[in-house]
Image (cartoon, rainbow, N blue to C red; front, side, top):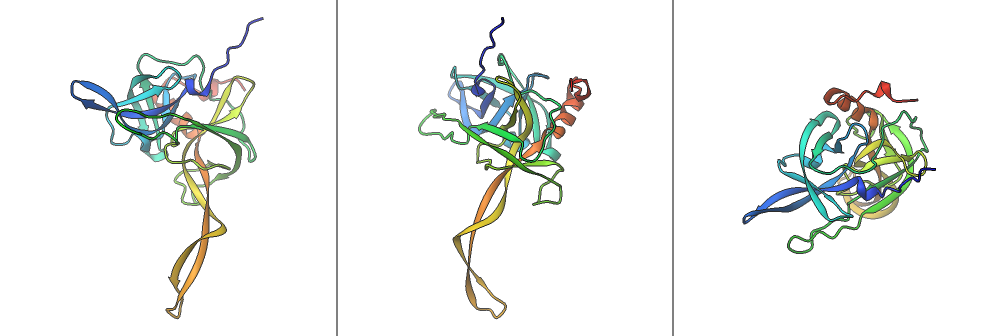
Length: 241
């Protein structure tokens, strides 16, 4: 019987950096966000706003400490998605696009690098975070200022630095079904915690107390499928049901 090898999320979900030149060598510059590898087609995915205005990019493979240059393959600003090629590295396993139906209450997880911060010099302590929750609803274009249809609202926030992280659903012990790509948050009022002073109709000052609860929003995989079918040989219709 063939033994299945466990693949850690850090093997295919990586932090993205700009590249800067110091003296006669290139080094990692600013931390930009999170991205991930797809199993088919073999590309690296992130959000378009993560790499916007950057021309020299690299990812870091955290288990080995190695960095790899990337080049931009395609960008879709309308759906905030970007495809990249990575030089000299591809993981043993990666996120899969499947025909798994996405439902409200679908169990999901997110592995991201929102905790990455430069401390001194060229040091970037990496302590990735795993978030587990569920799809709370599918958002329409007119809901909560979302720019595109069928965005996934999830029960945990997409923090700064987590943009581009995959929203994954379980399909077995060692397989990762891609459901969406985290890119931002919507906010809802919850228990009072913040006090605002405003003017009422009589021009008198009164206090308004608010607390905003952020819930993450992810780009539905269908928008990624459209981009892949346009820019690569990938065809969603050919996937097994």
